[in-house]
Image (cartoon, rainbow, N blue to C red):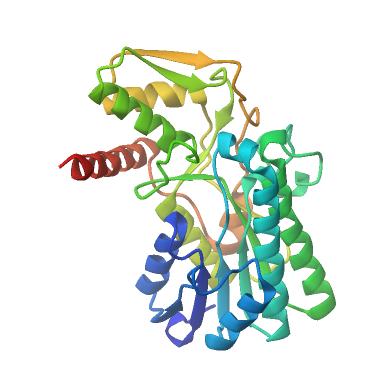
Length: 316
C-alpha cells in the first residue's frame, strides 16, 4: 500500500489530458513530490534523455502515460510514427527504470491492443487471440510490446512493473483538434460548429454500427492511482466503465445534448474501426477496488459545457 506523502513520483505525459488528472489525483492523495518531464527538456524516445531524467529526479515510482496518439484518421496518416514513438518511449522507460532500480513502474497501455474480433466483453485472457484492428494496429502493437517487456523484466530481473489498459477516455480538457481527436470530442465539435454556422447536417465517419465503451477521465485517473497504490501483479488489467453504445446512438445522444437540430449523414466510405468494444473490468475491481462512478450522460454534459466555454472564450 503506497503512502504517497513519502514518495517521489514521475508522471510522463503529466501535462496531457489524462496526465493532468493523474497528477491532481496523486496530489489529492497526499503526494507532494511529483515531476512532470517536458518534451523540450527530455525526449523520451531517446534512451540518453530518459537516463538523464532519472538522474535529475530519482523516483520511487514512475507512471508512464506519455503517448503519441490520435483518432482513426490520425492513425491512418501516421502509422510509422505512432509505432516508433510509442514503442521507443516505453521500451527506454522500462529499461532505464530497471537499471536504476526504480521500486515500481506503472505502464498505461491501450484497448487498441486487443484483437479486431475479440470476444465481447474483452477479457485480458483473450489479448493474444488475434491481430488488432488494422487502422490502429501499429499503435496498439507498440503498446502491447510493453506488456511483453514488463512481464519479461519481472521474470528475469524481478522488476515491479504493472500494465493497465484503459478503454476510450473522454471528459473536459480532451483533444478537440479535428485532425487528431477521438470520436466524442470530434462529434461534440462537429455539432456545436454546425449549430453556430446554421448547417443543416453533420457528416459522421463510417456506418454508425460499431460500438464503443467510454471511461470518464477522472475515473481513469482514480483507477491508475489505485493500481499504483495496491497492485503489484504481472497480469494486464482492463480499466472500463461497463457500458457499450453504438456510434449511431452516441451521435444521437450528443446531438440532443448539444441542441443540434439537423440531420446525421453517415459516410460508409470512411473506416468504422473495430466492430465492438466492451471490457470485462472485473479484474480491476477484484485486485485494487476500482469501479467507474461517473454517469455517462453526466460526463458528456460536462465535456460539452467545457468545450462550449472554450469556444466562447475564443470568440470573445
